[in-house]
Image (tube, rainbow, N blue to C red; front, top):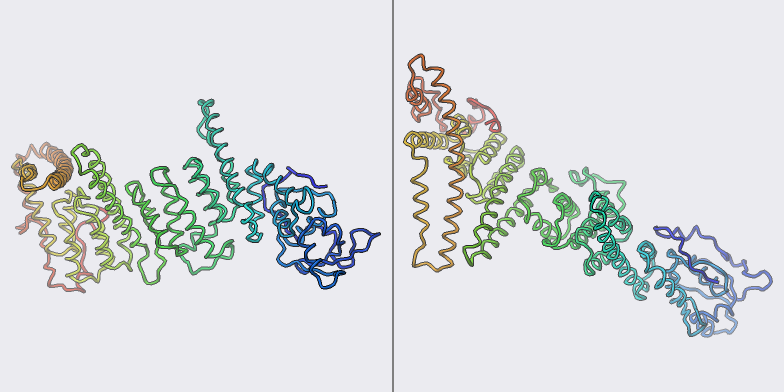
Length: 614
């Protein structure tokens, strides 16, 4: 009567309206020689049937007939029937003993219909409930593809499908089958050491594409079960990435940069996209168990911002990005801003990421404050901080030309990093110079406020030469640059390239007896960090002095015939960059105060025009 079919494809069931009907009008009869005696209406469709085969297997129909006012009741209506008309036809075929196949496409609807019609063993042995349970437990759970197909059919069924445990059964079966495949592929990989990695891992991830057809709530259940059973975190991340690519592909680049533009090809609504983004972020493995690609994290962060996901969702993505901020590229940080009348880039998000990164560095240092053996970890943290410092300087230079970028936001981004995050300030100087050029209407007070973040002692020789001739800078800034450059040359001549400062740092690092051991260690760690930073600066200075020595030696050899000596050429070099220039000592700077706000925009840049060229 009823057979089980294993010939199923991995797809959701076809449209029920396309299924053939054996009784679709009131006048149609099952048997031509026996007239029907009861009409049952399902979703507006009438079926002319016979009472005896129905009441012999369905407890619900038996009760409805018995409860009728007239014993000869001939009309019944079934409201909210699971699976609709097509499933009702299959259930009636079962009652009549007609042959049909139970497949993965109709097993869940038939199980719900059998429960609705109360077709249990109390009325007939091997009734529809028992037959569908056998198929689900013996056939479906053995195949991951069939479980996925059954879950697809459950999407259009009423809540009774979850009460019957069909969803949980399929979810657990999918997780278990994936775990088995992982173990088998792991063992097979041991026997193919000569093959490429792609061949070893390619067969393991075959189920990832299958799961992408599931609805997000079912997919969430499946991934949660996989993580609990022990499926490899990297495989879960790969599945999350594939699911996001399939389900969120309607959010294109044009929407990210112009959210007001409608997308006619969108397959999901905005609320559904928000639910998907939040669910996928919630499913990400822990930081220590998996290495989620940064490109995926930034992509999800852009999606979360666009669909206005919850604050917790966005903060989680920012926290994960901050954990590996030293590995981030500049393009990743250029997140477009979606708010009207704001800067072109989402600076607030990047600011929070940097603050989170610094907080993690501080937390690690506090955890390591119990002993001196953690110096290696502290060095690693400082190296990451220097990388982030260079990254943020490049980011500042990239956003500086934005005409909508306010001075307050630009300064807030500069202040995020501590002073010891930069060995040299060339990148910061370049970003500030670009901002000054892109915003010529800044007042003198605002220019001074911005330029105070540049440490003239941390500028390279090339940056110093550029700053000394940069008329976009305040006069006080240029004087300070020339002063420190003259002081540096003086130290170079005297051979005291920072030894006094280094010895002062070393002597200041002696712990005080009045301090607690924890405070002593914190002070020593801070001094150690400053000394490392100073050593890095001295290396940069040494490299510059070596370059200058090569240039001066070449000049001495070229001019040796004219009687010019090393000290003569060097003294003239110092005279050219003196604060008060004498005859032939260079171009005298025009006082800044005599020009005013409008005059600064008409200045001609002496030397190089662009700060990015130094």
